[in-house]
Image (tube, rainbow, N blue to C red; front, side):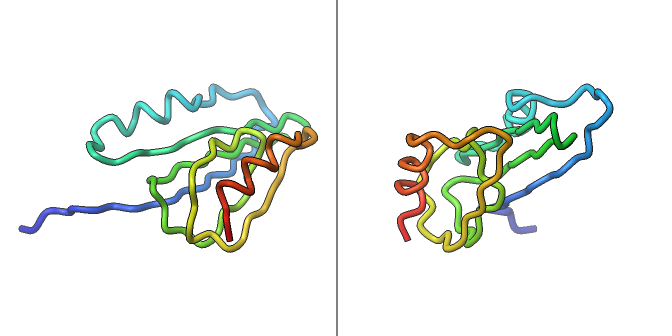
Length: 108
């Protein structure tokens, strides 16, 4: 049986969290990928209390995705050479530094 040498992925999870739940933190999610040697896994969780939603982003890096949906103030940065479409969402205003990071991360 052949072995999987490369596994690239990008998951977005959106949960309705109007009721208080025990939600995982970014560190909790990152720990689930401890057995992925030689792969950088990026994850972050955004909580939107006004909307009653939680968004979770998990992806392998470097990424070959063409779309980056729902980037927020928690966006961790990085270089995304293939992304052509970016959408932004947040309950708080974006700061100037955030847009500088976006320009560097998505050069096209």
